[in-house]
Image (cartoon, rainbow, N blue to C red; front, side):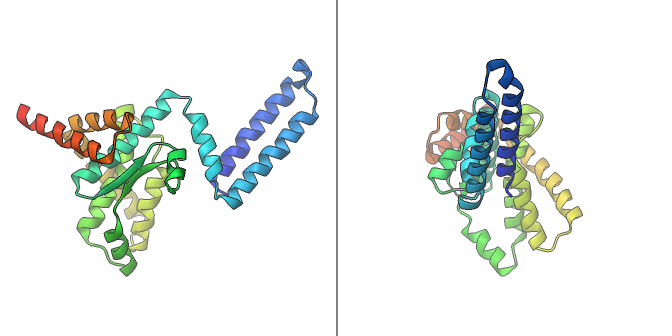
Length: 232
């Protein structure tokens, strides 16, 4: 069972327990919580097995967006990925900032930055990858966590990024201990890249908040870097 389905079940249990406790006070029939429980769990099961949890992901993401901080974390997280990918020369083809946008574009999860990654995919298929390519992608994968940590002093997102990094490293024969070391190393590398290009990062965040195009995002990065170079 996916984590999304587990989360949905947890939410449903909480709501049903609450309605059961409050039922006598508001004269709510016991049949209503029972019917709601059956319906909610049925939908969660159907979503998990039929749509691979996408419906639950969209619902939970929609509920979370009532929190302004959650929305800001998503923007800052994805801006970190975008900036570092651009700085390291990996082509960017798109980005999404919600589970619904990701679903509309046929992407999994709650959104993210889409990279042109045919080259790394081809290398991984052969079981060999250049050091340069691996280093760049490790930095990119850790950049969302790095950005959140710099702005909010902690990161709530990024578990999927860590999993992706570990899967690639383990497929290449790295031990769990080395994977953890490389996570920390590339987190630091990504933080340094964002700090060194802070004006560009801030401009990118503003642009992504307005949901400008990929091309406009890149123009914001370049223009801010140019302005920063002139000041120096």
